[in-house]
Length: 343
Image (tube, rainbow, N blue to C red; front, side, top):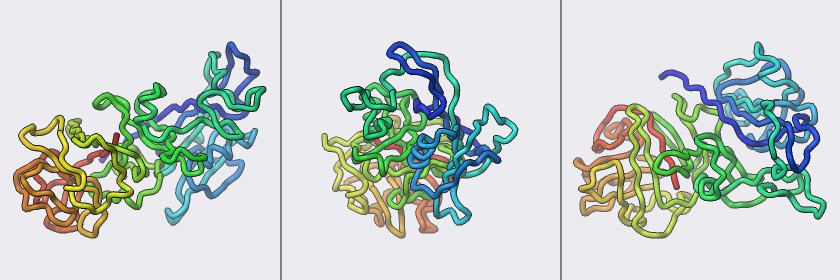
């Protein structure tokens, strides 16, 4: 499968890139993300970090830092943060394609009003709007849906999320789909084979829609809607729970589909009601939606359903290999790249 490069721009201001700030205007730098790349040969410091947000904080604390790389170590067990004293714009010959690495750097912009984005407290000791903490860092919302609802969406791309609304220590970057079915989707994973959402950490250094798949931590995202995207055809299917109450994956793994009741679908066969499974078993793991035929499925028992549409990743069983999107998957099907998101 061909490699896909995605570049995202996030409104975060880096040290050293901002001149005198007034209430009217300021010149500064926007923060971009280039997935699958790194700037080499200009490393100031190297750290082991929990996530990209921690690396960003280290860059913001270093006046010489202009950009940084986040990449896995040799064993793919830890994340390495490299602070750079140059950007890809100033050293284009050193900007290299690097699998599983992401580059984060500042881009010069023209002057405009950013007084509400100040990283310092006001004279009364408070942060400006959309900032929080002693360092007045950008406030991370709990989900892509909140970003959309609060009018903060910048379109499809990476956004910081903090599902527990805490102190940012466990905030992570996630891909937000802000266009499909009115947007606000926190994308959990893209895969052309298997998925294990329960054990995923916030991991955004892979291509969001590329061969290796995209992973983020959706376990604590409240949702009552789920979307499946087929990247082979561009088709999308959306399901909404009939119950008015939201649920989280973290507290619902391996429960029977009867736990969540019936769901209505869009972009699918309207002759069926639908059911959801959230699984993490040896037999099957991932989100699974299929039609209801007077039998609620379990993660290890699919009711012998050989007629309704399935939306699932691959099972470990040789009888249920492949990825199903809007076709019956009670047998081996071909692999195809799909993405799953929650709202």
